[in-house]
Structure formats: structure tokens, C-alpha cells
Length: 317
Length: 275
Image (tube, rainbow over all chains, first blue to last red; front, side, top):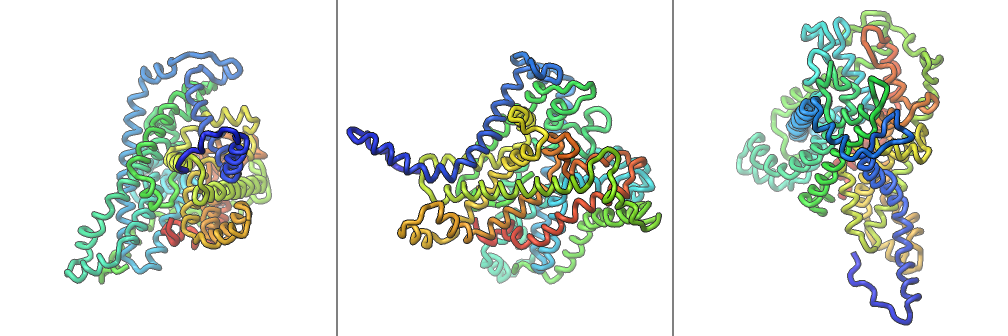
């Protein structure tokens, strides 16, 4: 940031403003595209979300929506599905997150114990679900969990029904967990690699076994990365619904695996009665938007700039 | 890693065991796509190429698979190109130029990176409608670009921070413009970062489902993810050999790009160059 504002201009006012303009021209040239993208697809939609949530915009009122104040929010508060959806969301986020962190940690530590080539190969295999399109990934799940005699899992477990319908929650958690685990794996592996080698040598000289080294040296140093993954994935899981949409679409039956973000999406884009409720969907999304903004601001504080910048360079779903 | 225990092959055995399901899943696609009938992953029908008939004919009212393939290429290529270009410019500015609000902008980028952009889907739909970009590839490309850009800026800023400043300094002294320095000196130096971001973005966009599914309606604009999704359904009735073949057709280009680009990706993931 530049220190010191320009002196208050007197006679040479035009000169000094021209100079300030010239100074800003280069940064403006470089930053304009990014600014346009941010303005059009982050700032504007965030404002539009709040605005839409105060209207009764739907397929029927598309051309002529009315301002309804907080009616959509009141509906959400009074709906009998709300407690179920909230419970589902909490269940989904916590269980998937727990799986992600534990599995990611296990994968990172265990692949680090192996020769580099083998470790890297295994990590690439675990990255496959992340790289594969969600549609293909879900296709594989549905095929393996298909009813007897087609599905492998059903055949092995002796379940003749479709396993997705028989055990919707384990399916949803595991399917999302396998994707999320690879993110934890990447971040924890990078963190393990950045541990100074002296520490390992010192611990070996002291006669520590591998398990002791992992427990006393590696795991304590993973505290920060674990916090980071937890914070990050809580937020992204809260808003993610792609895999649930494809796997169960909130079913089987009514609201069995419906989470908040999926509920919002379905209100706005899918409807059994043919009347999609944008206003209501926007109100549900607005809750997520507000939570998202607040949480990411808090994260920015907790994980300070410099920390964040030396931290993972990995995208999160 | 000086952490290797003597019995590391035991660890390998354990890891291999939990990795088997992943391998089995992908194996199913391959086996299923060349068979008339598969139980589990055991072919019980005949080996056949019949499942690949979608290459030559249109299935039901779906567009030709080649249309969908072309759209997916345009979509993923467009997103990749746009994200790399826009991010590189912004990242260079943050890394090298001094301007008022620089710290603020960096904070904004980080907040946007953590912010779950999917929650803006409903409003984005409305914005695209108003802009006349609904049901067009350009519209989805733009929204997808916005999703990936914060990560891109952040990643490339790290790469720019790490290249030496001296050549640029020399060029500045000689009187080259910033834009020229950016194009001819800085960009070539961060090429690994640009490649990594390009490959990564391409792969994510190639697989992207929810954006095309929400913002595209007409068949002529379908991407492969919508094409494949339209075939998923009741297992008893759907022709899963056919679905598997389409899935394999869809995943192969991604695997190819992944294998070619893995060196850059690993670099990005494991900090081959710090950032």
C-alpha cells in the first residue's frame, strides 16, 4: 500500500492529477479484467440474491414479481421441513468432514512412509475421483451399488435392493468423503514434506520407532493444516450439493438426504408442480451467502495473509 | 523421506487394500463398455462394440455426441484460457505493482477463494438472463471463470513472487513498459505455473456438471456432462453398457490431459516452486 497521500495541490492542480492518473493507468490495465469478473459474477449476484429473496419471483410471476418483504424467510422458519433439512446438513457436513480429515491424514502419513515413486503413484490414484467428472464418478457408484445381480457391493453384502436406496446416508458420506479425502491428503502431504529433515534424524538418533516419530513429531506439526482443512471444507461442504443431487436428489422418499443448499437449488430450479420459486430459493441461498461471507472474513483473520500464502495451493470443491 | 520404516511393504499392502475400490470402479467402466451384460465387474454377456454405437448415431432426442464433445472442448478450453489470462494479469499487478488498495485487493481475492461461489447460482441465473447469455456457452464460460479465478490469482501470485526481480528491473531502467515486461520477461519465467493452472482449470471445467446443467437448455449447446447425466437412471431399464461406453468416451480425454500434465500438477500440489 502506498504511504502518504499526495500533497494538497494548489496552483499545479491539473498537473498533479494527471500524474496520479498516469500512475494508476498501469495497475488499472492489469486489474480491469479481474475487477469486471468479480463485479459481474460475485458482487452483483450477491446483491441480486438478497434482492430476489424479498420478492415472490417464480415461474408464474417472472415478468411481474412483487415485493413481499421477509415473507420468504418467515416461510423458511415455519416450514416443517426446515428442522429435518438443518439436521441433515449438520450430519452431512460433520460426518463428511470427519472422514475427510481422518482419511486424508492417514493417506498422507502412510504414503509418506513409502518410497517416493510408489507414494506418488498411490496419491495419483486417490486424485482420480477428484479429477473425474462428478457425473462419471456418480455413474460408477450407481453401477457398483445397483440392485442384484448387477451391483458388485450388493452382491458382496447380500443386499438385493439398490444399495443407494437401502443405505442412502453411508453412500452420500462415503461418496463425498472419497473426494474430500484427496484434498486433505494433498495438503497434509505438502505439510509433511516441509518438516525439516533434522527432526526425523534427531528422532531416529533418540531411538524412536516410526510410529513414535509419527505420533510425537509429525502429528503435532499437523495442527495448523488440520485447522485449515477443517475451516475450508466446512464452508465448501455447506454449499456443495452436486454429488447428492446426482446420487439421491435428496431422496429416497421425502427429504431423506436433502441438505440446505440442495433444497435452495431445487426450490429455484426443479419443481414437482411446475412452478419454480426463485424468491424462496434465493432466500435460502441468501442464508448461505451471508454465512459464507462472514466465515471467509473470519478465516482471513485467523489464517493470516502470510500464513495463507505459504499454505496449500489447491482448489476446493 | 527419512521416515521409511523397515516394514514399509506392510503399509503398502494396507494402502493397496483400501485403494482397491477406486480401481475396481474405473475397471467397471472399461469392462462394462465392451460387454452386453455385467454382474459386478464380471462380464456374463458377450464382448461387443455395440455399446459404442452412439459414436455414429444420435440416441433418442439427444444431440450428436460430437456436438457435445466440441462444446465441452470449447467450454473447458475457453475457461482455461480466460482464467489463465485474467489471473496472470491480476497476479502480476499484485506481485509487482504498487497501487492504492493493493492489500485490500489481495484480501478480497482470498475471501473470494474461501467463499462458496455455488451459493450464488440462483442469482447468477438471473444475471445471465438479463445479460442475454443464458443458454449460451459464453455465459457458462464466464461464470465458471469467475469460480476459478480467485484460486488462479492466488496460485500465480506465488509464482510471480518467486521469480527474480533483477531482469525486470534492468528492463525498466532501459525504458520498457510494464506491459512489455509482463509479456516478454515475467510470463515466460512463470511458465510452469501457467501450465499447471491451465491443465488444472481445463480438467475441472471438463468435468463440470452443475453450471452447464443449470445454465444450458438447448441440445445444441449440451456438454458431455449433461449428455451423460441424461442417460443415468433406473438401472434395470437403462442400458448401462451404453452408459459405461459414453462415460469412458467422456473420461478418456481427461485422463490423457491429466497424465500429460501431471508433472505440472504435482508441482502445483506439492510446492515444487514455493508460493
